[in-house]
Image (cartoon, rainbow, N blue to C red; front, side, top):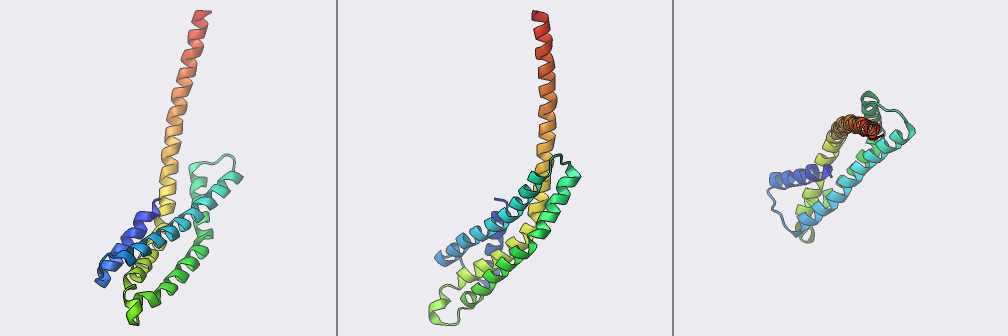
Length: 162
């Protein structure tokens, strides 16, 4: 979900730079863009999950290493998919004839959004994964401390009752 604002923002910036407005074709392009951006994020997150299933006891430093390795491992497929999509949208964005001139906003939105989401997903998503993991670890430690205190209080109350 973190990649969607990056993709939509890139599409809006590309439309603004090209001097085009938001119409039905650009919204269709943004919808297509959401699928591609989500797929790119899923590739990275799924690879991180695969690595984590293989590891048993993982600390923060090891988690950072896993996230970076997963991002590097999926860099090539993500860039290849994005380049293919951009190359396929260039004729639509250029709008060489009368019929395709209507759809130029779709091509522009997809090209701008794909470029921004690809770059930012490869940079921002690993950082977000690391930050979320740190937050979850802190919460687990806090819950664990409270749980130990509750267990100790329960044991103490049971000994008082006996």
